[in-house]
Amino acid sequence: MTTSKEPETEQPAGLAIRTLIVDNDHAHALAVEEILERIGYRCDLATSGPEGLKRVQENVYDVVVTDLVMNDVDGMEILSRTKQLLPDCEVVMVTGHASVPKAVEAMQQGAFNFLEKPISSNRLRAVFERAVDAVRLRRQNLELTQRLDERFGFEGIIYASDKMQVVIDRLKRIAPTDATVLIAGESGTGKELIAQAIHQNSPRKNKRMVPLNARAVAENLVESELFGHVKGAFTDAVTDRVGAFEYANGGTLFLDEVGDMPMSTQIKLLRVLEDHQITRVGDNKPIKVNVRLVSATNRNLEEAVERGEFRRDLYYRIKVVTVQLPPLRERREDIMPLVDHFRKQFAKRHGNPVKNISPAVSRKLFSHDWPGNVRQLRNAVETMVVLDTDGLLDVDDLPPELAEADHSQAVPGEGPTSLIGQPMSEIERWAIEQTLKLTNGNREETARILGIGARTLYRKLDKFDL
Image (tube, rainbow, N blue to C red; front, side, top):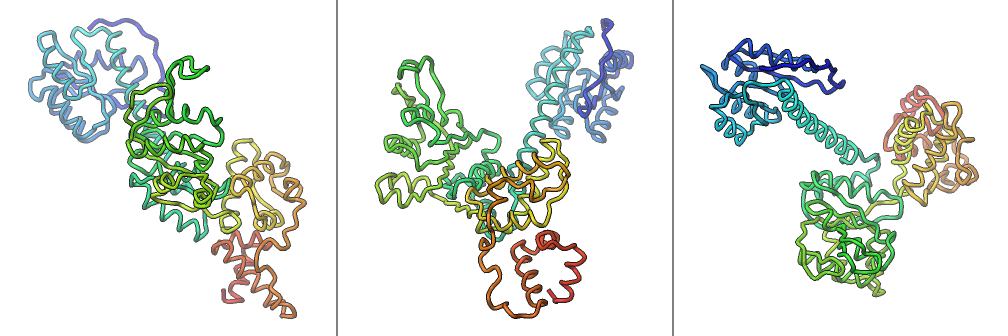
């Protein structure tokens, strides 16, 4: 083995690479170890095939560097056993000139690469670090997938209401299928988040989810955005362009505001859903596509169909399964959990350590009707976090439209006339009981909304046998 002096380096924190060297030539194994340790990698040594097998069975490694020809257990058996026990481990074979064909065979069976003796330190480093890059890329992809699962999995949807539980239960049945889905709901209810959750919990999760808002695209460009175009198809088409269907191939296309799609495009979309192929604008060559369509709308499409604004046949094709998202005012139990989530999110993003929300603000937020739904609530909380100066979201942090609003009639059933003239204890009992219902039994949230301490609430719960 030839060596050259190389600078010692440190492995990036959190990305430690576990390495095993298997070679019955002890001196050669030590030389490989020295080069790898010089560039920052710690190694375990096994100086026989059986010892190498034992270490693979008892430990987890990211890279194994093994001699191909050994007296007892050869490198092919090390490769086979490693791939069986550690499928994500990369195996680098070391071979003499006479056994190069065997090394090529090893690569066909899953080895990452091979090194021919005598090994130069530069060649060893280059091959080894490519193997390390492959390991790290796989690890990063796994971490990204896990983060996506956390963010867009059903567990990442913030809710406490029975109405949203019904939605989630429905989504869990829908997601694993390949059914076309229509998500209906007012603006700001979180339709794209639901589409992401469907995609992330489907067999297509490792492919793209491509969003396209039909309302945000000029009418004369909708077809180009959906199906792509070829050079010269129209004045500004200076090059070929892939459309959303091709880009989402194998994955999911999220078509938002589908009710605003021009009638001429509706016909072509229907044809794509029936034939599973698109034709780029300006071309006549069909292209096969395999895409799951998830659409969303804040319009009543049945009424649009009756008015002749939306094709009936397309309507039935895109609504194989429908998910109806309730507005925030109909699921008030979700308001404070969402507020708390957004408070933490924006406190971290803006570097403003907001820890608490005053009871007065809780009441304001809880009783507001939120015509813009979750999007409006999110924006309001971000505004409050940005403006806050004392770590407590209070009335002076409220956006003007909330600070000036009168919520005395916002919550249906608040202060029924039947309580007029009743003892204060009955009124108090009713207030606690109703607030518990609205917070889905969350006692801490109930105490905060009522403006009392948790211990005080617990005493009153015992007193009223609630």
